[in-house]
Image 1 (cartoon, rainbow, N blue to C red):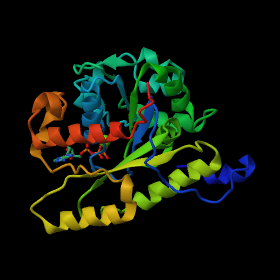
Image 2 (cartoon, rainbow, N blue to C red; image 1 turned 135 degrees about the vertical axis):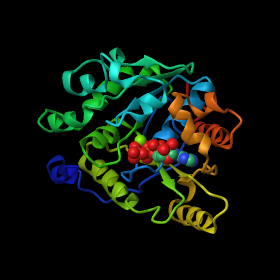
Image 3 (cartoon, helix red, strand yellow; image 1 turned 120 degrees about the vertical axis):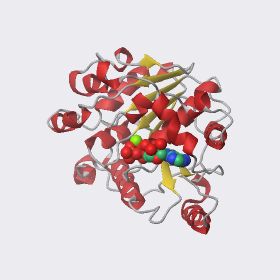
Image 4 (tube, rainbow, N blue to C red; image 1 turned 90 degrees about the horizontal axis):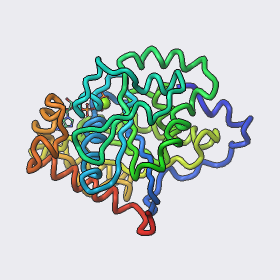
Length: 286
Ligand SMILES: Nc1ncnc2c1ncn2[C@@H]1O[C@H](COP(=O)(O)OP(=O)(O)OP(=O)(O)O)[C@@H](O)[C@H]1O
Ligand SMILES: [Mg+2]
């Protein structure tokens, strides 16, 4: 990622560091980037299944797949090799986001699919005007049509993730209940503070930490959860996602866990997570 703090002085945003997150009531629509630059920690699984659970609760929900791996798109049953329009066209060619959004088999859940070529687009983006805020412009044009917009970020802190963090108001960070769980999280938090101070997105906050891949058979998992709660306090959801083979099987069938095995422990956990996320919405919300 370019260092947005470099621009901070020019923009007059060089004040003291505000706290990194809050759990205040929020109003809909909420735009939530799911980020952790560590790979394979459960970002996409969390994005798909939290978004789908909110959709099943009746909330109009959009999932923006910002990862060139396109796992969220394929996990929702989209054949990513046969798409005419993707997020690539939105970021590079000014296609409107509305023109690339597709319905999914889950009612109330839509997806803006990724393209495997999005990785090359990151290089092209570097040379473009307003390169950090291109996704924000696209999301702002459609946000009033949704209650929740989730952005599944790639495992890096590059320009694509920066676009995700500039388009969102909130960041949700999944953390694996494993050794080195917090590795890299400090760097992500540092980047979020830089984005705020630089003026690129002064409102950005970490709203949600979710502990995932919890293995009840190990003492380590409990220790890690305790450490995460000590570190992040009220930002950590009460619900912990168990390690469950069913969660890893569902995407192979292009299904969310709620469609694949609604009674499984993973499905129950993500329904509870969706409820906890929604409980953070102010009651005055539309
Ligand atoms: N709770 C879980 N129990 C078992 N397997 C899981 C769980 N959550 C995710 N997985 C599996 O772990 C792998 C990584 O998960 P996922 O793709 O969600 O992570 P990611 O952070 O999005 O990865 P990347 O950084 O590559 O985008 C996948 O094979 C997924 O099916
Ligand atoms: Mg992913």
